[in-house]
Length: 312
Ligand SMILES: Nc1ncnc2c1ncn2[C@@H]1O[C@H](COP(=O)(O)OP(=O)(O)OP(=O)(O)O)[C@@H](O)[C@H]1O
Picture (cartoon, protein in one colour):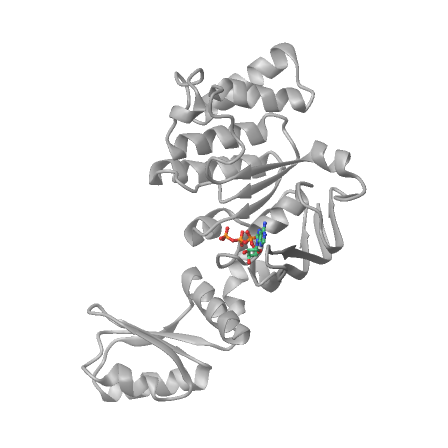
């Protein structure tokens, strides 16, 4: 449903220098899947969403949505895709929530009762009942975010690009958002979800792609995201005695030691090193200690560190 091949985008700064935002990016997203796009600030996520929604031209390479080229078949792509930004970009502050949503619907060809009913039901679905006719500039950030979502859905497109959609939402609303994404998946929508909330990505996505400096670092089904750490092993232990963390870190096979009052996590380069660490911990009387699968934030950290080392 979404495909990019050797997609590149270079921005020119005012001083004439070039910023390679995507270079090159290859990504395939199947119909009906929720695909999480993760990456550090400046990784290129928004640039990709903007190209897929046809508001930004690629420098080279190709991108298609539902088989239509984002450069040559702009109109057909626009009929099939909606982008939802985080923050308050793209809303008309003096217009009400209802006017913002129905204006967008009318741009997509909805009219009359269909437009009215669809707008009203989306505003209710996003918890804005009773506030529909207030100017959006009076809304909180999280409320504006809900208007954005309603706007993105009014034309009922098969593809949704959600760029940090829970940015500014309170925790309850953000949890409700997860149910909402699951509903959309059940309706058969294809969703590209950009988020810095890793728990959210793990909870709602079928597939995850980690990008950095405009390239894919790892892409896999969500249940296999831990493959991204390769041979690295995560040892969980009880609290370490003073000085042991520093000793462990002196071993080049130890990637990282995170020690706290409740216990420690020791990341090793491979399984043999992890087993040596467990033996050593046993000798030092640190119990219990064992290998466990990495959590998503640990995978993310590992990939980000690798990318930062590579960059410089
Ligand atoms: N209009 C622009 N002019 C120059 N450089 C830009 C422009 N827009 C983005 N960039 C640069 O392109 C790179 C990718 O930016 P992009 O906004 O796509 O990242 P992102 O992954 O969405 O980041 P974030 O997580 O902070 O939203 C960054 O280095 C950014 O500084």
